[in-house]
Structures are given as structure tokens and as C-alpha cells.
Image (cartoon, rainbow, N blue to C red; front, side, top):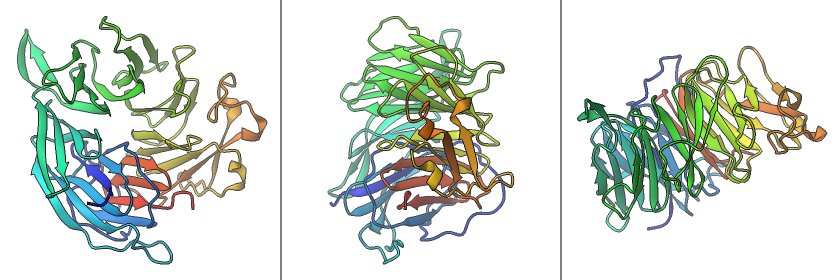
Length: 410
């Protein structure tokens, strides 16, 4: 089978109820609104955009690009489905998308899907609201899905030393063959895809819900929790304590998402319940070096562009998807930020900590402005999930659709 672009869409975050949906382009009838997108490698896509119509709630979308074919992985009624969305090369002169979608395969999943990540080109790791973590394998030779391995109740609530039921597994991150999961039980698990039992479990990693996790380095992870803390965990150390703790000042605002700069790993971005974008330098201090007024409601996802990290993307319950641009020629680019009556917004780097030299925190006078663009200015329903790589941006909304922008920097 030819390589494909895969989008994975699961379910569970509370849905928004604002406004009306934007007019769709090409539509694939699938299921519920998409809620969260996981990061996976994409490659340049030929078509400009495609809209995938859904009908039921989701909480994440994963994307993976290969060469010529386009596939969609979705969840509807707790069934994980892989769809063919046609030939990426089959695009019109203006980059419009062509191709009729059809279902390739699907499989039942127990519980709401809280998060998903590709382990490799064939395997998808799925986090469930039941606390179970499952590896599903896509057999491309006969277009079937099967459960490759399952860790039952990897996350669970404990009452007087007795398991009283599963706790939602809220986040998963993969670095093949290693898999790290976090949950509302405050537990961290380290699995290996080729081993039956957990390699390591930190039972009392956090007294509050862990909302998201990502790798900082091969042996270190970052977690964010519901009391506004960013923590670093060194998996080489046997002590069950974080190596560093960072926190927001003042009110303990829950943090929902985290990503690290792909080239400068000391730079970390987080977003939370208040819609603020926080930039952290984990080499110094315990507080963020920048707090940027962003969305008017919860920020669900934050992602640095993996190959061009001068660009960062965030999405929110308020129905906006923002492109934050700190590239050197930013002042020459148009911006169309439609929020609060503004058409363009610039943030001066003088408001940031000037001691950090990076595309995000630079004292270079040629980078004295940051441009912010709302990529979907007419959207009013929650944008729950996004993924980006190369010129492709994928996002899922409560407008019962997933949208794929294939010419992000055009």
C-alpha cells in the first residue's frame, strides 16, 4: 500500500456550544466533533485544504504523512476507524482537494479515547477514559485493525489500598519502543512496546491530575498538572520525585498542554485554563519567562512547528486557532487576527525576558515584533485539537469537522 496521511480522532473532552460551523470544503461524514490532536510527522501535501465532516465528540486527532495517499483515523461511537481520503496528488490547479473518501477498516474501543500517538507507521497507542492503554496495529496488506497489546487499568483510583476502578489516562507520548502515560490519578507509567508489564511506575508522581506529557530528552519527560505546575522527570533516577518543578505565580491555573522547542530543548511552551501562553526557560528560575495574553478561554493544544520553530500554533475553546510568528521578516507579512475588533496584533519582545537568546526570546532588534494571526477568523465553535508539520496544518473542532490546510505558508 502506498504511504498515507493519517489523522486520528478520539473522544472525551466537554464540547463547546458556540455559534455555527464554518462552511466546509470537501467533506467526509465520520462522527463527533474533534477534540485533541497529537503530533506526528507530516510531509508536504499537494492539496490546499480539506474539511472532514463529523457528528460526534472527539478529543484528539493524529496526523502522519507519507508520499501520495491520504488516510484519516477517527473515532465514532468508540470505534477507531481508518479512512482513505483519496490521492494527495489529485489536486486542481488552485490546490483544491479531490477524492472520494471511503472506510478502510475499524475496530471497537472500550471507553472514550483521551489521547493517541503513533508508535511507528503501523501502530497507534491509545489512552482510554477507563485507564487502559492499548496498542492497535494497522495491517495495511488486508486493511484491518487489531489490538496488539493492552495494559488494563494502567491508571486507577485507589481507596484504602484497594483498586476502586479505572482513572482516565489523560496523556500518552511515544519514543519507540518506549511509551509514557499520565493520568488523572497522578500516576506516571513507562512501558515498552515489546514488554508485557510496565518498566516503571511512579504511583504518587502528583497529588493532582496530570493533563499532558511530552519527552524533553530521550530519558526525560515534561508533565503539566491541574495546579499550574510544569515538572521535569528524569527516568534514569530511581527516586520517585521530579528533578525540577516550575509553577505559575498567583492563582494555580490548570495547565492543559505542553510542547518543547524542537531544536532548543530548554524552551518550553504551555497553555492552560485561562488561555494564556506561557514560555519557560528550564535552565533558569522556576517561573515562566513570558506570559502572553492569548485566548479568551481554555487553551487545548500548543505546538511548535517541528522544522520551523519560529512558528507556534495554539487552539482554544473560544473558537480560535492562532499562528504565532517570530521569524525575522515578520513585519513584512500581513496578519488578520479577528478577535475583539482587532485586525493585527504585535507583542513586543521588550515585554519578555531579554536574557534568553532564541527565536522566541531574543534581544535582536530585528526581532522586536511578534505577529499573531487567527487562521480561522469566522470560527466560533471550540477548536479542540491541532497538528502541524511542513506546510500542513490539521485541526479538529466542535463544528463537526476536521480541517486540513495543505498550504500553511502560501
